[in-house]
Amino acid sequence: MSAARLLRSTTAVRARARQLLARAREGASEHFVVSGTALAGAARSVAQLTRERYPDGRIPYHSRWRHFEAGGVDRRALLDAALGDVDAATRARAQIDLVVVSVLLDAGAGADWSYREAASGQRFARSEGLGVASFHAFLAGLFSSDPQRPLRVDAAGLSAVTADRLATALQVGGGNPLVGLEGRAALLRRLGEALAAQPAVFGAQGRPGGLFDALTAQGGGAVAAHDILVLLLDTLSGIWPAQNTIDGEPLGDCWRHPAVAGEGLTAGWMPFHKLSQWLTYSLLEPFEWAGVRVTGLDALTGLPEYRNGGLLIDAGVLRPLPPDWATRAWQAGDTFIVEWRALTVALLDELAPLVRAELDLSEQQMPLACVLEGGTWAAGRLLAQRQRGGLPPLNIVSDGTVF
Image (cartoon, rainbow, N blue to C red):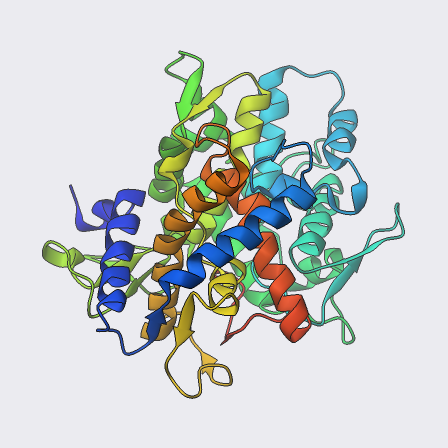
């Protein structure tokens, strides 16, 4: 197995994250101190917020579909109505098309951008805003090359996405700036190139919805969550702008950390695959709605982004050591940021069973995908709102593709 392939698994993500957590607990980290007692308090806070948000105990997956529900609007039903009377596979392909482009647009928007939805009259910011905006861009056919078939994404349509066209769809302007606009448009064009280059998976038109056919081709009515992720990583790793490669193979969201042990060329690399995992979480429901059972949900990891990671800092579980940690402009590849994200992954694994115990739920009743939604992401946002008006605790320079 190639070094790059070894790093394209959540087994590698977890093992290496736990290395860095053990090291920090031993006092060997120059970046963070870990408080074990604060973890229990964080779990209680997450559990309480989960009860408030989902008093009936029916906690959905952490997924892009939650953002499509922003403002109490059932946009899945709007898409179903627009698609009309089609079979389950056709509907699933359209849903997957939508989710893939929407998730790839879902990196930090910045504090000054928002989107006004004409139909509801509501204004949305951050992830909800990007979700609602990309939903309407999809309905309008922005990502399709065929005006007669607007409700799809195809390689030719993506190749025509410019920053200006994307800005119009996302209502970006002088008074409504969006972080990383050029990077997002370039990412979608690279996605189009990757789809066109792999017709065996994505079909002659290069549609993300080809994932449905590729993953259900063996029959059996089930697919493993990790198999969804691995197929995404094997086919789409080349679209990421990070210049992280081993032997010319792109690694995507995988970064150097000198304390990470590993075999051969993988030594010193800490993989995350955050957006690919977020995409995988967001694809669970289209498969299930089409009657395909998704197994092994907890093979995926918690998402190392600024809400989950921010929760751990704001709740006192992680204490940053650099004196300028709160004011410095950090880069995604800085060792401090790589370690923060790794500790986030490892600590979310420890936090999840504590939250379940508080709620008296089993792992089957509340998989990690539901802990995140209930949950840690919402608690991170709430603490950020209370302490900094919603801003994350760290200032990370974003190109619109990692955070």
